[in-house]
Image (cartoon, rainbow, N blue to C red):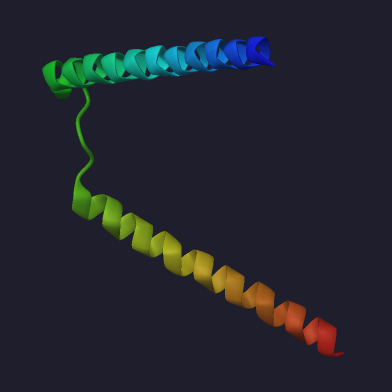
Length: 80
């Protein structure tokens, strides 16, 4: 029984070390990416906020109208 417990403990420690190593690597890569994008931010321009909002509002109404029309047609078809 003691041998099984020691193997389980070793397996647990190895698993925790692998997870710790992976998370450390992930944090390092995220920091590296943040530094890259801070340095080269001028290469990635942001969209004009007003333009994107107006476009999304216009498409939202169209999508809503299509959804309402489809629901109305489905409801009429079910009743008849």
